[in-house]
Image 1 (cartoon, rainbow, N blue to C red):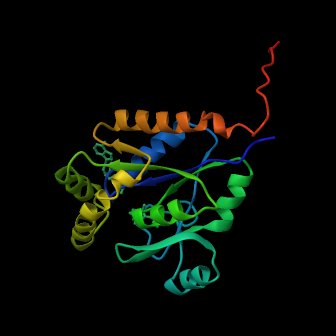
Image 2: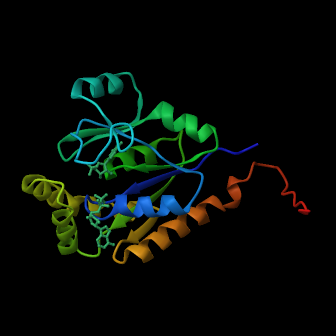
Image 3: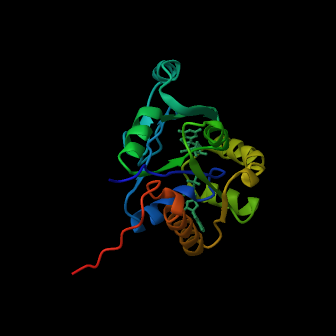
Length: 205
Ligand code: ADP
Ligand code: 5GP
C-alpha cells in the first residue's frame, strides 16, 4: 500500500523565479502534484482558471475562509490567496506528493499546524537588483505592483532562515538541480517507509 504523500512548501519573493523553477523540476519528476490555490487577484495574460489558480471574487473567498476550507490563507500584495484543505488532504491520503507555492505567512501557518508535516524550501534571488530586473523583464505587472512587490521582498527574505532548505536561483540550471535533489532526498528518508514494516527486496526476473 502506498504511504501518505509528502507536502513540500516553496516560498520566494515575487520575481525570484519560483514558477520557472517549479515548471522545470516538475517536468523532471513524477508523482509530484502542484496545489492550485484560490486567489482574488485578477488573472495575468496567459493564466488559466483552474490551472494556474482558481480565480474567485472576494465574497467567494470569504465564504470559503469562513467555512474553514483553507489549510492556510493570507493577504499578499493586496490580494487574498488560500490553499484548499480538502484538496490537499485527499491527494496526500492517496500517496501523492504535493507542492504548495505559498508566501511566508502561509508557510508559517503550516509550520505551526500539527495536522500536517511539511518540508519547506525558500528560493532567493542572487541580489535585490536582479530581482527587480526579473520583475520588470517579466512584463506582467504594473510599475505600482512591481514597487509593492520589491518593497515586500526585503521582509520576505528575513523569513529564509525559518525554512528547511535555501535555494539561490542564480543559474536556473543549478537551482533546478538543487531543488530536484532536495525533493529526491526527502522522498528517500527512511521515516517515510511504513512504520514497523521490514524492507523486502525481491529479485526481478
Ligand atoms: P516568480 O514565480 O518567483 O514570481 P517567475 O518564475 O515568474 O518568478 O520569474 C520571474 C522572471 O525571471 C521571469 O521572466 C523568468 O523568466 C525570469 N527568471 C527566472 N529564473 C531566472 C534565472 N535563474 N535567471 C534569469 N532569469 C530568470
Ligand atoms: P502571484 O500573484 O505572483 O502569483 O503570487 C504572489 C504571492 O502569493 C507569491 O508569494 C505566492 O507564493 C503567494 N501565494 C500563491 N498562492 C498562495 C496561497 O494559496 N497561500 C498563500 N499564503 N500564498 C500564496
